[in-house]
Image (tube, rainbow, N blue to C red; front, top):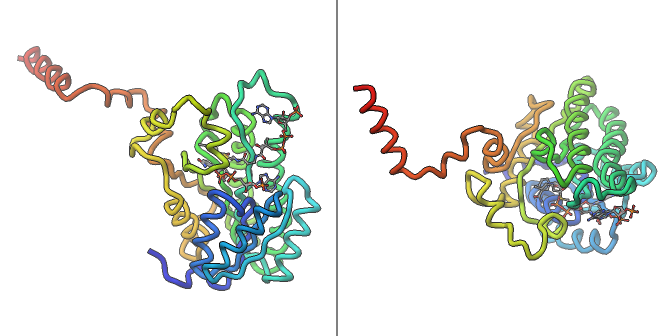
Length: 283
Ligand code: HXC
Ligand code: NAP
């Protein structure tokens, strides 16, 4: 689908790039020629991911960094510039989440998620912006989710934080375009990862079948599908796309939104009977 050297000479930072979707996107960017800088809080997880990513032949830097700390982030970005060169792309992917009835949340529980997702995206964007501005531009890509605009019960801290990231995406797309920085977002629906599934799919309830039924395409997303979209959006092929959020959810959120979408439960025989009645009445 893509030219082999599509991302050659690009230095791409992926926060939370040691696991799940971040690692899958990193893998694809590496194959397409990018230099990779991944970070996360757990050093051993990052070290293992660096070894795996190097197998594709990519130049990879791994760093321990908590995106909630502006100092940590600044150090991570400085080190990236020193070892790999100016930052071309920042993928804000790190996140925290869990399910809980909202009335059971402590203040610290709410703050923890908002700090990782919203403050973390702010810290990383601020530090990357300085480098990009000095070097004539770059790309910011933020991972949100579809409930950033619909909201969702039981994940209220995450919904609030992702809505904030979406607002930040659209705001900075306008404000920082003058520095040659494009800012976009991707809103994935459910893509199985260990991080998300252990925290969001309650054990023993066997809700996966019901989750798939909510999706018009009747299946979860595959990591490769997300990696394709992200590769396009960070590439020069997308050079006029700025301030957009691209949904990749098999049609899930629209199915929940449309008043009559549940009518796909009506069998063909019932539609035929209604049609016959309508025609008879007209006669
Ligand atoms: C209620 C909870 C809780 C839970 C933690 N807390 N888990 N409250 N229900 N299930 C509370 C704690 O009691 C504490 O508050 C506060 O949150 C901080 O918890 P810690 O465990 O001390 O925080 P920390 O060690 O920093 O861990 C952060 C974390 C953890 C977010 C809680 O899950 C984590 O590290 N997550 C990172 C990866 C992740 O979440 N991946 C999934 C992304 S999936 P008190 O008051 O007790 O101190 C995603 C997909 C969305 O975003 C869309 C899907 C379709
Ligand atoms: P994941 O594997 O748990 O990824 C989250 C990553 O963020 C981890 O590598 C984690 O590493 C890192 N992280 C968390 N807190 C951090 C912090 N304070 N500083 C630095 N790194 C931190 O989950 P995932 O499913 O791949 O999620 C990736 C992204 O996709 C997230 O933005 C998520 O909201 C989004 N998303 C996922 C889905 C889905 O269905 N999977 C759907 C919609 C959106 P450490 O714990 O080592 O720090």
